Image (tube, rainbow, N blue to C red; front, side, top):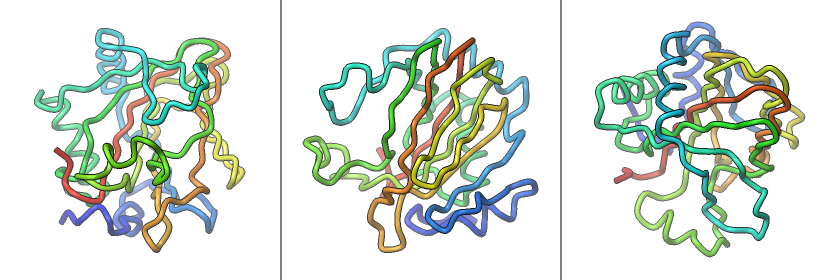
Length: 211
């Protein structure tokens, strides 16, 4: 049974076979290997290659090299993407109406996304525009689509956790503290790829239905 995205889905995630909780008291974070099959990953990589565009930032910070990846907006009305979206919902227990469209990201050698949080800064110039209807981001679900030859890890500096890319592996976390405010300990850095390419998909959820 699905629930509202402003509730914790920790118990639901832990009920899925193979799910592991990252041992930190500061963030609700989980890992699940082989969430996507080799064939699933290959199909998503091919789609990202066809439809990629330069990635953007919600709040420009004057650093043109802050996010240098490319992004692909997955078409949520297509059957395979809708089925993937449903898989995220079944795993998390979060109703699909709270979800943003799934995005793919592609990183070449030297590309990165410097340390950031996924929730929107309440003091940011674009906060009202991004959050006035659907509210703040709640949970993040990210899946690595390939094994990267070198580099490309996701580093959570505050909790001293570095997650290595591994084809099909999902990492997810709650972007909020128990009082609903943003959890600064979710700060993470998509580190530079040193050799090869890196592909991921990302699914974000909101406090209220997303349209």
